[in-house]
Image (cartoon, rainbow over all chains, first blue to last red; front, side):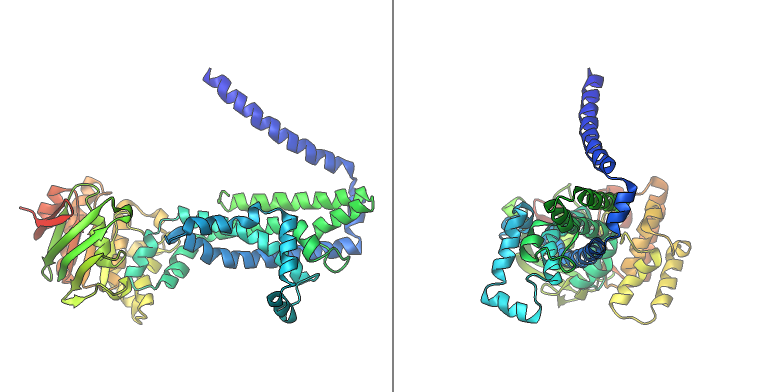
Length: 256
Length: 213
């Protein structure tokens, strides 16, 4: 009886994974290596690929820089209203992506937004692509870093305080070296999330070829002109990148 | 000298409390604190360290009121029950840590003296994961002593050791206390440990400290 139970669960898992494998296999079989090569050599695709890699890296870097202090605060400090702050930090995860794009667009029409635009123009620029990616990626990075700090005992940091360290030194010298796997995982997760971001970028930064076009925009642009071959080729590239990120996260030992 | 003057502390949600705890441990004394599980022994150590703030009362170390001081300003060496070695630092870095934080220049010399005294010179390049229970305990002690504290607080430091290592570790603690002229407050569950080490024996019961006969 027990054996039947575990076999049933295994079959459900295997069925789900098979479904995903079939989806990817069908996508891969649709395109030929020649067509794929031809697509990736197109100047606009190469530009979109380069811009995607650059903006994802910058957005993930900023997301990590934000996630470390916020994650540490949420994991280590109790304060009134913490539950509400915790819920608020997850807002970008639950908001529909298009809504985030519209919020960004409207914010930069306000007087404060206009002042910021005078220093760094965001709307329909590469900086806007990074900001749109960052807004969502940061929420995932914060969640990962909070989980990392939650799993680390606060005791070594407390001992560091008795040994002459300030709170900042305890974070810098004790908590961060212990959290480096979590930091790598947070970076990879936010990088992957940024790579797949589409809605906010389309609304806030636009889809201008050779300017603000990133890989998900390319898929959409190619589909909209009926060029399914190119859309599939770009999608395959993104699948490969996503798998590589997943491997990197798993290799870091951090379960997210 | 450690003096607690009417210290009170209440856990969040008022599930547990220390009430008007007063005690005085003379300088260079090895005091042992006993009490049942969950009675607040660790909390008391954390209050002395400054890791928790008392609701009322004063904490004095060598007659200096340290109640409002940060943990780093109190001159305390603290060895918690789990030893809390820094996971990503080698033994050398662990012991150098307090010297680096205090900007002391002759750090290497002090580390060398301590590792020789504690017999851990061969462990300097190891990470905590590659140390045995007894080795970890010695490293934690060396790290606490490197800060050159006036008071050493030990929270069940021998609980994870086997019987053979236990005897050697007790001897080591006694020697270190005498050699470094330390005032020690050692929390333990073991009556034999308390009898062997304690020049002064205290018991925490129902949130109050009494002298144990």
